[in-house]
Length: 147
Image 1 (tube, rainbow, N blue to C red):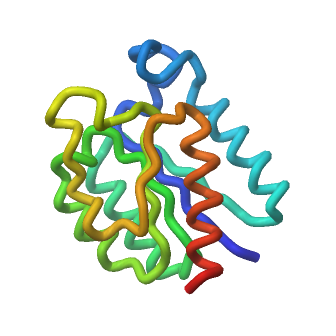
Image 2: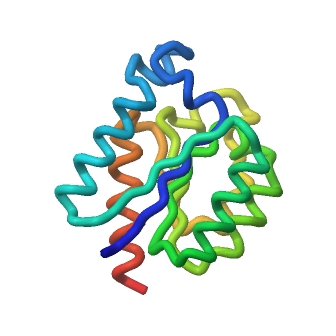
């Protein structure tokens, strides 16, 4: 069975409470439930993981490499703009990596316009709220089938 790893980054455990103008009122648990519904519909397995600790995120990415996942979708939050440690871990992967964001990072503060992952990601999806997650999973699956 195809296995996708969905990585949620820093502060995402606060979805539903944090800046509802940008992120809405949906919680991380609700997002994960929608992801699992899509996984069932697509007959794939999606493992979800959230951490506020950069080293734990790197460890999870390394585990994904060693366990042979078929794709990775990552919403790293603020780490997107400066975490070379996460970028280097993602660069080890030989499967599609889809970077996603709920908000349109290109219409926000200037520091959010740059992604240190963009160069190594298969693609980027931003600005579609919770739908960004579902689009990201579909994109990782499609990219994996094309390779």
